[in-house]
Image (cartoon, one colour):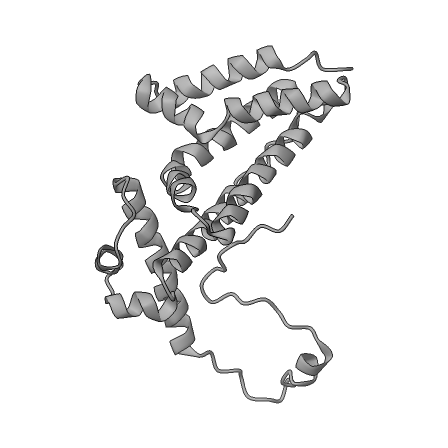
Length: 226
């Protein structure tokens, strides 16, 4: 599954095609000059994305181009020089968030049952706490956008596959139908809105909300095989 990740500033993928390798400078060649304007443009692009995300955390309304430009410290013209429209900015911000969320979950599948459960809950809670505003904006504004719909599907597939790996020992004891039903229940339990209800409606702290998830997952999972 491809996950769309916003590139870090100044870091570009290497081109190893024969034509590009042939053009690489030898040791005796002059140092390659870095295009300072390109670096500044990429940095500006990243700051605009970060401004968009910060504004989403402060309000339930989609930010305007003027608000984004003001928060980023650039002109509206700078925003639209890097993004054709606000929809493109929304897609880019979603790609960045998906990359961050995916990177944060690399250590949640190691250890015994308790350790794996703790890792899953901690990673999922961190993701929901940090990216809930963006997720709500993503779902509310997907409309007829294939790009945003694809990102929603990608996020859900990533969550599903991570649980399959994390709880593989327990899932192995179930038949196909039981296995799918359990994953559906776990996905619903640890969804963004589940986290939001605990935190916003019931006023639980992050620690209390994680404890609720842990207790519920423990009850749902079958016994771990030896």
